[in-house]
Length: 260
Image 1 (cartoon, one colour):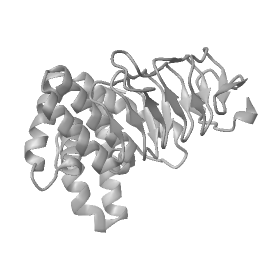
Image 2 (cartoon, rainbow, N blue to C red; image 1 turned 135 degrees about the vertical axis):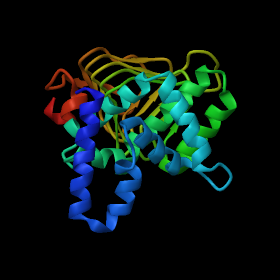
Image 3 (cartoon, rainbow, N blue to C red; image 1 turned 90 degrees about the vertical axis):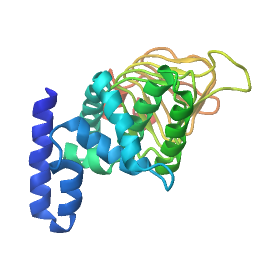
């Protein structure tokens, strides 16, 4: 869906929300209806989420706005992330609710700013954004980590992603997932999660290993070696226990490994 159409749909939902819940009218107006496009609404929401007593929302918002102006792909990725949550989460019935209330989505978008700053050699500011992301949303992603689009962090609390990790397009991670290293080694030391993967709640994937395209990692698993494409792994340490029932487990979100 083109960004303009997406934004118009969000505004229509916002107007309906105001009618249904007048108590939220001023909040919805400030977050959505006062803005002329998706990116200004997004920067307003995120900057107010990660501000603190020392760093005001206005200063942070200027950084978001500059990043969105110079790198519009960040905004496009945000829209794709919202659509991914809307498609995969049965508890969600509107894109507006993802934008306004879902901290997993908001944490990913905050990371996108930190990643942008990291590669603009504004590393101290990137680390500040990372720290505020961790404090505000309970999600700790190093600014160097690469995250694709169409990504969903379901519930999100406790997700940790290391500096050299890669999360490709169309991946779903549940709460308390760790994409970490195995020690104090330097260099390329974190996992690479390929397209279509779903990682269950509490799973720990450690080291410079690959989770193959279309695979599923069971909840609570500890993965220490490469996972082939389109398999289900579970256990401590994780072993292959089946084959996912669909090509992209990230979309169906079926966490029961006994179904595979």
